[in-house]
Length: 130
Image 1: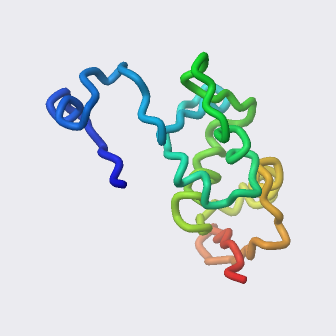
Image 2: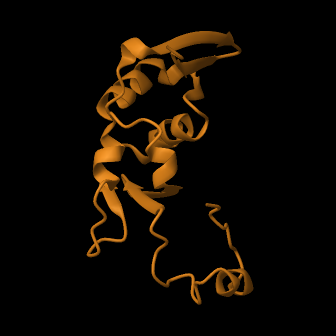
C-alpha cells in the first residue's frame, strides 16, 4: 500500500487525517535520537530484521509517539539512510571508525558490510548481497 506524504491540510484530509497532530499512521515511526527527530516507516526498518530498530518498533506503544535512543543524532542519519537506500550509504572518512561502532550498536553484523574507499574523503558502507 502507498504511504502518502502530505504537507498540506487538504492532502491530509483527502487521505484520512484531519490534522497533522492527529492519530499517527500505523506504519510511521518517529525516532528521537540524541534530541534529533527522524521519521520513517516500519517497512523501511523491517528491511533488516536482525537489527535493534526492528525490535524497538515491533510493538507500538500508544503512550509514546516517539522512540528515544540515547545516541548521537547527527550520526543516525547515516544509519537511517542505510536502511532507506537498500543497504548502501556514503560516509565521510573522518567517521570511518565511528560509523562502524554505530552500525554495530544498531545490530548490524559488520562482517556482512563491505566498506569501500570511494576517494575524495568518502567511504561507502554496503551490505553484502549474499
